Length: 329
Image (cartoon, rainbow, N blue to C red):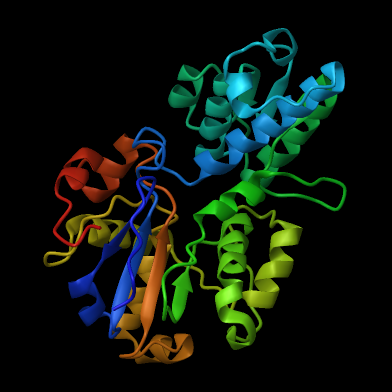
């Protein structure tokens, strides 16, 4: 059994019964569902506030010659400068909320598209855009250009870089030995690239080989992340929404005594792959899963909308958190 690292910020769970059903030696879950408390419950609270800090620190440095620390910005001693700064983001919920949190924390205004009620509670203006995520990205970029705002994004382009993936790399876990498979949801690619790069020092020349096929609902992959994923990832799997809900239920149920996990829709996709592999030898063989496999899943978000979670899973996030079993560490 692999070594388990305990952290106050996020937790591992050992899924002893699940691993038996999945034809594997061990299944570990890196649980981010309480990152910065269940109110946020997402790894994205690592990236967006850091990006806001960098923007504001640069502005203060430009105007005063001093570069403030995060603690100094939180005292609002540079409020006269930061209050005139507006940041915006394209988001389906999480990134917008975390950006609003960072803006509130450091004292600037914010514009985001997201889970509107919670985001508005943090002081943001919410602009809804018809269409998919790509349309929101284009609108946010244009709004920022027209209004002289700062555009914050988890994706990038040749003429636009960002700080979010740098800080999201904190989530990578370098202390688990003997892991053979790591599953991470793809999205625009930034978090997957950060995690895989974090594991690279362990993999070195033994990294998996293959040509990944990139399919993401966000439509706008991060070019820098794609280079890392093309280099390190073995492959990509597309997961239907309906199966993702089944995986949310499996994780929440605690599966015969395993720890219960509150997982959002996207993060549950990794469990979907294991569930399919448990009943399909073709999938198992393609993924190289066998009785010697030790699998690490990343639950990168919890119930970022508790009402949606309860409607899909049939129980509240609070009830799942209360039912965490004896395998939590």
